[in-house]
Amino acid sequence: MYGYELVRSIRKVTGEAISLGEGVIYPVLHRLEKNGSLKSRRKAVGGRTRVYYALTRKGRDRLDKLRSDWRRIQGGISTALENPSHA
Amino acid sequence: MHDPDFTRLRQRLLESGIPTRHVGRTLDELEDHYRDLIDEATCDGESIDDARAQAAARLGDIDNVVAGMLACQNLRGWAYRYPRIAIFFYPLACLFALPAMPVIAGVSNAPLVARWGASLLLAGLFTATMLLVLQLSILFG
Image (cartoon, each protein chain N blue to C red):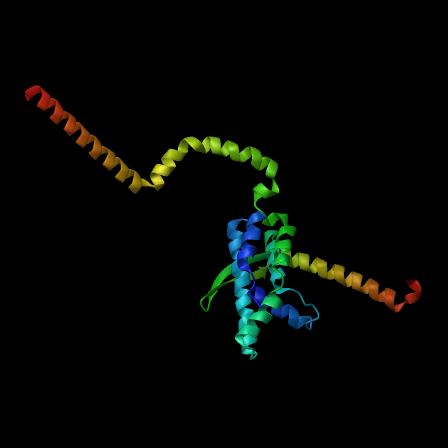
């Protein structure tokens, strides 16, 4: 996916709950590419040259770790909120 | 509503030590994204002015883009990341490169150097001929 597609996808899957200045996605993408989590390739489409991003193996591993961390935190917070006596 | 100031963004990124190639790519992506946002808004039936205004608002403040780029040290050129090394390395590199500069300049401007050489040769020949004529006229005149 290229930047615009990624932002559209984020808006769609989050039900537009996450709203951001769309330009800030590029520094994030470039940073992830620099640390090896993403790879990019240029592709000419309809007279425009777009930069398409894809996850690398390292990026997939990182995503899995972040996902499991998030679920653990989310579970902890849910437990605390559901049992206010523990809070 | 004005278009996003991509020229100012380019200048700010370059001033902050982001390499030129990377700045070019970032701007290409942002300008492309901006065009996509305009296309999306016009497809939704907005006028071109409204579409541009919406697209600029959705793209966001360019200062945030600059801040995002600067937050990642790896995106900056090495001389900005290691200025102390650059202070020593650049003069040293210049010192070693200096003797080669005339050769490099000559090779890269070969046609100019050739024209300049040919002009000098012609001028020399002309002067020598004139001196010879003068000499002969003194001897046999």
